[in-house]
Image (spheres, rainbow, N blue to C red):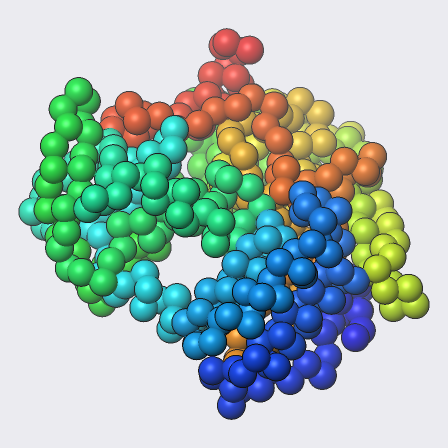
Length: 421
């Protein structure tokens, strides 16, 4: 075991993946459990936030691992174990044919987004198949074949590794309409009308559920004046080299700025932006990190400082947009941006998984990871599982999705303009 230079997250060394053991015997299965349990026990900085006694989890999983006597059972039992640490970073990190085959290779022609515990059609991916399936944007899915969505959630969520329920639903949205069958029956609610329809799926070669974000400015804009006197920075596309020129424009032409953190950053513009929106340097984060001398103990590193003395800092109102897609580095950026004067966060619960990850192998060629450092505000307030808590909570609605509105962006514009504070 070592710690990565600088960041100080655990570097797991010398753990054999036992690639030849695709169907591990009882000894290797127990080795999987013990290896995973010990790494979490002594090196996971957020173990206290798991929500249960980790020692009891060990006792619970010994008979489960012994009973997992084929490749399918072993894979699923290991995933159940991973899910128990409630970390959105924690999952299988390489392609897993067992999990993929269970989900099926036929994909729906639509994206869905959970609203009030029901998946809602948020985007049409394949217009031909969606029309043949009788689906429109804003349709609520009530059931798939004979299973209600509530039953699917109850069955699926315990096995979905994530820090919180909204993020579990985010991930479930990617698979709930996936299937081993090309056609099956779903129950749909459109307004007051409830009806059954045949969902016609396509193959993975036909349909790419990750193709585009829901709104055009999220896929083709790094910076724009999205409304009169209101600037818009897309964290998913903005580059460090753009920041100085962007803020030259903002100082001249804007009264407010929206920073959209609902996508993962392609660069790391945290310091470049904070130098523009902070009047002076200030601490924004600290990290609990593991100890090589005392495994299981964690030292606080930091706080880190960003920004600089800047009498010409940006004085307009600032809104940071977040939702369940705001994860890891996007959360890290958000917690720094929110500490600027006149800045607030608008949106919904974020993924609650911040900090650099530590990966490792398990017997049978399985690979996984966990959040290797804790991430806290300088006052010690946690972000793991909790996420970046909005100042104004705004979630998408069925009506807003049907009408194609970005309700978080709309609320941000209202706030900047002084409406409905």
